[in-house]
Image (cartoon, rainbow, N blue to C red; front, side, top):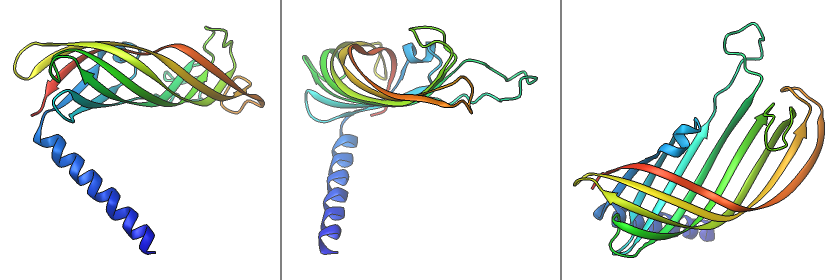
Length: 196
């Protein structure tokens, strides 16, 4: 009991220190236009962690559920719903929130893809998870005191675990598989508002 209380107190004090330190500096709220183009609403908060360090916390999700009623106007035979998180620790070459940066990011996503006849997926349904890490480079342009634009690209690794099903939401399970991926893991063109 004492050990659990001590751990909770330590975690609470860590987050209290981190939040106090972050909000005493700059915080930016961002929207990645590249994800928007792929119909993935997203939001990112980036916190200052020192003179040249920031922590970016990106979240995106596409939970567009479609009806199974084939007579409905909302009926879709193709589906790609997912949610993802991609935190990134950034080192700025000049000053934070201005110019070039290098980043180290992790990523996790939960996906449900159905009837997308591309990339060798065919018409089956895939339900799975991916996780991994990568490195990135980006550049941020200051537009005025509060607004900025940012471009970033990242390369890395992702481990993908998924179940394959027959087409449709109630299709029979056809198997389980894993894949390892090396290549682009991050792309972004973001519009930024500096809160503080």
